[in-house]
Image 1 (spheres, rainbow, N blue to C red):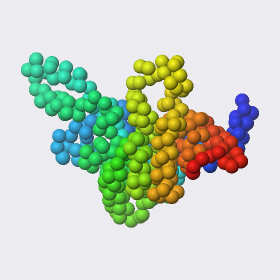
Image 2 (tube, rainbow, N blue to C red):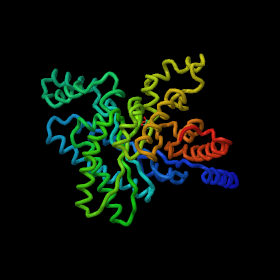
Image 3 (cartoon, rainbow, N blue to C red):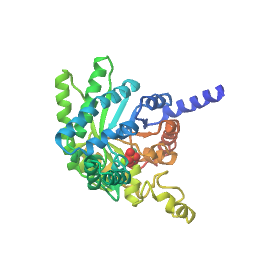
Image 4 (tube, rainbow, N blue to C red):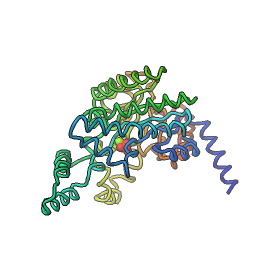
Length: 375
Ligand code: PEP
Ligand code: MG
């Protein structure tokens, strides 16, 4: 086994020296970050901050989103800030100077709101017993107000950031304060902030203004310059098609090919596979699920357009991918071909991504005339 490990390491080292794309990992905890580094990740390409609020902490997001007054919202944000600060500090410590891309909150809201049925049963029982149920009734009304038939197309990502005052600012403050703490402890954190589900450059301008303000304030107070690039996910067809405009407000792009596949095809990421994917595979509509291997002609076309548009506005604009496709061998070749700077995938897929990025560089770039297509 030791021999095998050495042989694999040697092959991976070979691939590393050949590849042009960097390989990062998607990670949101200290353990995942450490695992990613052991497997050769050169940074975190996607920290999904909503994952930091699963389990016990779910109620904090619930409190924030359902807050009935400015005071209740402020108190929810004050409870969240120190938690986020230490979450980010842990990641910066684990990555020790390698890039960490923190994505602002992108929760499908239905995963965070209280269960409607449970609540209404509680209200009904309380009423029957003649007990006071005013709090639960108010909560139920708020849950009803926010109910969506298609939560994945609803109040998520940047939309939530724009309608819940102070939410993104709190996260940016936590990032900035954690970076400042790390610098004071002698570290050199390299942090990037990423905005999810952008479809219009206006959304990005609004968040950027808010973000720049918070970064300047923390920099001032801490007496240091915090250099934090602000980029966007490209995960909606409209974002891909208007990438030239969006690039005006972005320091980098990261393709969210999970949502881009969902929205380009009109398939639901959550439901569709069980309903008809088996039949589609059987009948040859596709040979592999487009959620697994990038659909080169549809979703891939959108990626190509966005790369060209984005770089025609900002030559050399840094671009990566952080959807699941970032760790799929065929898709990695496509991303090399289209000119991305990095792929980011689950930690356990990092070695495969390193290998395939190396193979892509050798097989595509070494072919006479260059098969690599537009850069
Ligand atoms: C994506 O949509 O591809 C992505 C990386 O974001 P998420 O999977 O968190 O929606
Ligand atoms: Mg997404």
